[in-house]
Amino acid sequence: GEGPSSGLRTTPATHESAFLKACRREPVPHTPVWFMRQAGRSLPEYLKVREGIAMLDSCMMPELVTEITLQPVRRHKVDAAIYFSDIVVPLKAIGIDLDIKPGIGPVIAEPIRTRADLARLRDLTPEDVPYVTAAIGMLTAELGATPLIGFAGAPFTLASYLVEGGPSRNHERTKAMMYGDPELWADLLDRLAEITGAFLKVQIEAGASAVQLFDSWVGALAPADYRRSVMPASAKVFDAVASYGVPRIHFGVGTGELLGLMGEAGADVVGVDWRVPMDEGARRVGPGKALQGNLDPAVLFAPTEAVEAKAREVLDAAAGLDGHIFNLGHGVMPSTDPDALTRLVEYVHRQTAR
Ligand code: CP3
Image 1 (cartoon, helix red, strand yellow):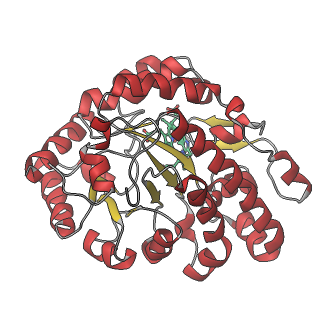
Image 2: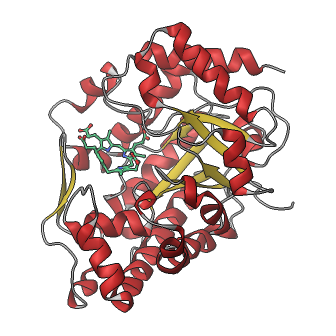
Image 3: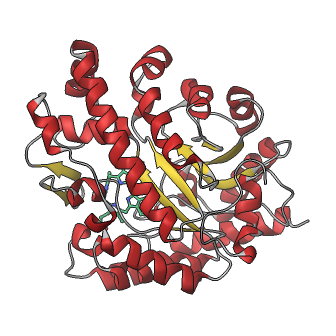
């Protein structure tokens, strides 16, 4: 068929799921819902199975990855699963010495700051991530018609962790390289695009029926800098998986001014955070793309009536769109009440049942 259709192993039932139909901008039985960071610390059953196991170790244990990925699907009845992993897993897999520190995030032992450092970013092959192929095989068998979303960090966001050495508020070393040594920067982003494209291919070939590229921190850039210094690498990632026909979702935080360019980079679905209403997001993205979003994750701390009123606002703003996937504007916060998420899924399904 035309445009995004289905992955290599996507079954007919999965192909017809509300989530994949919305990605393709086809009519849906109800607006599909999933939540970024739906697996994880908001769930007691997650904390239980993760007890005594470090985050990165857990990502390399296929049975555990399968269980954690399925937990939010069972509990909340979301319309899609997202593969349990982290954006730094492919970097770890090619031998970068890094760790995920609780309450902090990814920390890199030896940051990438010089041309000589680039040599440490070797190509990724399927043999580097056998646990990914194993877990996705188990997951697709268990998920039935529920689609599995694979994901990766986008070149800019990965570069920020690698150059800064860890999480950063202002990305000063990253921007210093981007503005001060554009050739080194372009080569770094190109290396990361190769690795990321290869990592997404592994997930699609194993059975993921959509992929999301997280450029979480790219909202730190002005549009002209994004276009010149980031977009070519993100476009290379999307191109690497274009031939599979699986929907490609692109998301970042604070990207109101970048939405059009992020679509242009090659996404089929553009993620919108809570700062831009969905109808305005659609205008900025332009025709031919589905949109995902965009309830402020902090709204989930308000009483049910307030959550439902804010969710209604999102649905109203998205009412005229061809394809809308309901999500939060960023990930679920760790102290969110899981029941609030379950109620929100029920509410969106009930309100949009056709
Ligand atoms: O969405 C899901 O449910 C799938 C799992 C997932 C994780 N990380 C698990 C995780 C996904 C999609 C990610 C992506 C990720 N990781 C992003 C992009 C998404 C975003 O939020 O913008 C980023 C920027 C990272 C880097 C990262 N990893 C951060 C900032 C943190 C939080 C550190 C902390 O403890 O506050 C992590 C760790 C991490 N990744 C956890 C989980 C469940 C928490 C660690 C734990 O449970 O011990």
